[in-house]
Image (tube, rainbow, N blue to C red; front, side, top):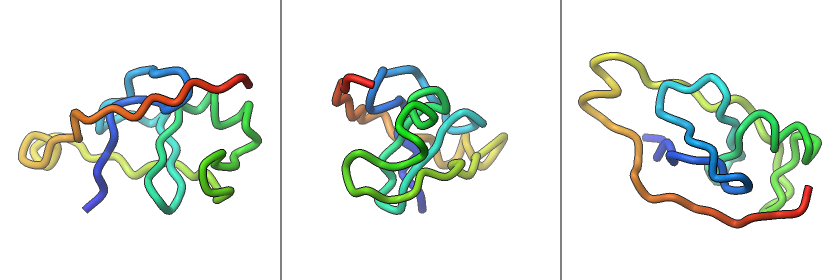
Length: 77
């Protein structure tokens, strides 16, 4: 199951589990749409492709909430 990290690693913007603005790489590094665009859809950690993160909604999100552990690594974009 995906961890669904709660925020963008670059700008720390909140990205709830049902957010359509979250993008991830295959290692689940998480970024907001604006930061991912500035990074040309490439993960700065692994060089992998950033793709829209699947959303978890409704009862499934309530039963399996997003992680509360934030990863924040400010970067100059």
